[in-house]
Length: 278
Image (cartoon, rainbow, N blue to C red; front, side):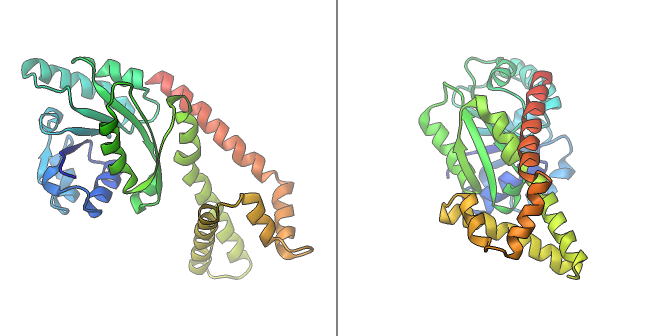
C-alpha cells in the first residue's frame, strides 16, 4: 500500500502490528514512521529498514495519513496534550488523518474529546490480542461515524493481513476484549494444565508442552475449518464407555464451562470499570 503509516509508541503491540504488516510486504519501510520517548528503544524497527524514527510524536503526525495510537491508556491524555501544544505552534491540515487506537477501555467519545484540538478528527477504535505477534490474532474494530468507507477499508486491509479482523458495534467491544483479548491467558492455563497432566502420566516435560499446545491448535483449526459446533466435535471424540468421556466427566464435575463463562464475564466487567477511569 502506498500510504504513510505511523505508530505512536513502538512497544510490543506496535511491533506486533507493524512488523506483521512489513513482513507481509503490505507496507514499504520508507512509508512507516515510529515515535517513542527513547530512540534507542526503537532499534528493532531499524532492523526491518524503518528509518523514520522520532522522539517527538508531532513529527510523526506531520508525516502520516494513518496513525496507530499504541501508548498505554494512562499516558494518552499527556500525549494528546503535547500534540495540542505543538499543533497550536505549528498547525497542519489533519482533516484526512485517520487515528487508530489500540488502547483498552478508551471509547470513541473519549478519543474524540482528547483529539478535539482540531475539527472533526477521524478515529477508529480497535482491540487486538497478543497472538497478533505470530499472525494468528483477533482484531475487532469500530469506526467513528465520520470515517469514510474507503478509509475504513485501508485500515481493515492492514489489520486483516495479520489477523482475523471483524467490525463490531462499540457497545460490545469490551465483551469481545474479554473473550479474544483476555482469552489467550485462559488458554495458556489450559495448555499448562494439560501438559502437567501429561508429565504426571510419565511424558517428558518438553514433549508434554508440545503435545498440549499442538492439541489446542489442532482443536481450534477443527472448529474454524469444519464449521461444526464445538459440542458436536467433542461428541465425535467421545466413544461410548471410552477414556475421553471419562475425562470429560471429570471436567464437568468441577464446572469447567461455568468457570470459563465466569472468566469472560469478570473480564468484561473489569473492562467497563477501567473504561470509566480513563
